[in-house]
Amino acid sequence: MTRAMFEDLNTPDDLFTYRLGALLSAEHDSLNMLQDLQGQVLRDDVRQIFAHHEVETRGQIANVERCFDLLGKEIDDAPSPTTRGLAEEANALLRKADPTLCDQVALGEGLETEHYEIAAYTTLIDTADAMGMAEVCELLRANLREEQEAAGRLEAATHALTHVSAA
Ligand SMILES: [Fe+2]
Ligand SMILES: [Fe+2]
Image (cartoon, rainbow, N blue to C red; front, side, top):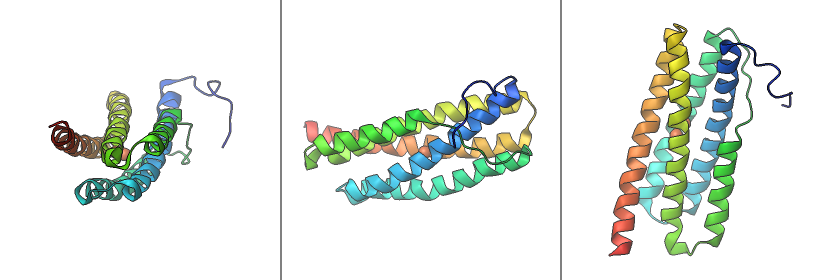
């Protein structure tokens, strides 16, 4: 949906809702990227990491939508140019890269997306906590934990792969 940017944001509550909507878009971008990358990687263990996080991401989307309910607001997405850009970058790099490099590319792009999500959740949790929105906070914290675990798995796989290929 289109709407004028900025003019609706007058209060911390407006900002929180806008960011929650941007995060909802980011999660949908992330879901698409996780599906795309599973079709591009060569190693089963790498594919498994993306497949596992795809399932988690579906739950995260439901959690974010539940946050809108708890706030008494309509589910409303907002632009997320960063995650769209990360997905475009992943596609561009995968087109350029030799097939032997594609797992490394996919892991790197996946890790960048996780770190973006971690930052976005961290900001929202801080605001939700300050506003005393306990249930919203709990849902966002559950998502954050999954992002951190996913980042850890991607980091370990990247490390294993780059150290083998550099040897
Ligand atoms: Fe996510
Ligand atoms: Fe994620």
